[in-house]
Image (cartoon, rainbow, N blue to C red; front, side, top):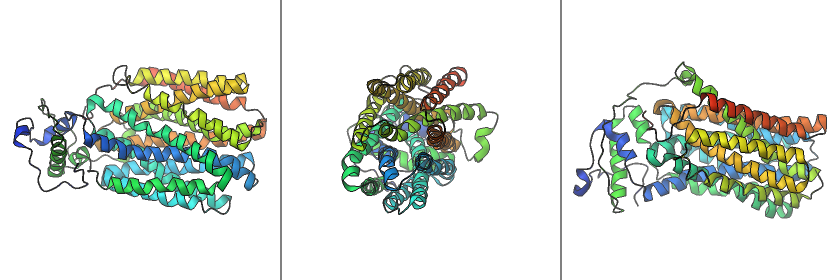
Length: 465
């Protein structure tokens, strides 16, 4: 299968398919949308989703090493909170700047850079010699991860057909819980035997293979159109069509000629706060903040909380690993529903289920109920996260899509920054964990109200609309 970063010289379609292709610059989005699911899309899904896998590994390993690192360096709860938050500070910065860079210079250049950044500083984390150096490397790793995830979502959403976009993005996000589970398994195996550093050395390795695989990816034709690079967009679209035809796939006719909305209009960074888009941006900021606050605040502190309750480090890591498996059914129950039920209903349902899970975990108290309700909570937050990743790119035009998704993601990362710090302060000052879970429940309820009142359904919507 020929999937290259730059299209080959031969862009002509086979004669049998020529009548089904409208060689008009305005038809390029429709040509992409009519493509059948193929090996090209499978490769795209695998390579793009691998970045989400790395994100899941990073989040999971943070929780796996906190208890071990706290004992080795004699750290207090507020210092452990800094470890949990340092990566999210970097993710906030990375998410904030990657979108504008990708909207200006292209998706491909930026996502090739981000994965190398992640590899380098994940490895450096394993060499940290004190708390200060560890926090610095976590911050720098976080910048790469924060830039990576929203950018790849924007890119992937621009490359797949609208009729199956929601389902494919949900599968794309399914790599995240696999990363969480891998991190938990690796933590359970490596940390007690070889120490926390080994986890970072192993976690750095996948990024090298991801970078090599990404060299074969095309630039987004939709982004090229937004920059008036029309011939390049047409050439790449034709190259994709030729790749799919070689698999004996039939291309349907392009039934509509869309007006080229984007043109060469530039998108200022602050356009997401103009009258037309400010309501969407604010709504998404609230919902993303709540999701990340609950998800990462819970996962990062969970092993440490269980050690404080009397479990051994190995036991706490094992049960954390067990709970992360809830992410898989949480994500894949969305796959058959998101393009039928819609994004809005699934988001509301996920946050309501999350409220039940977090209150049951925090207030009932016994260990068995913590396992049951923890599973429910992880199930729900996985649902909400994949729905957000599918929903957010659909609310903004191509010229500003990466910027908007990055900003929404950065709002989520703020939640990830604040949650571990607040949890550490609550434990230190109150000596009672109940307030941690009540805060999460309150934020999730706020998200339900916000989505119900202000979110609009985008199921089946073409990105150009």
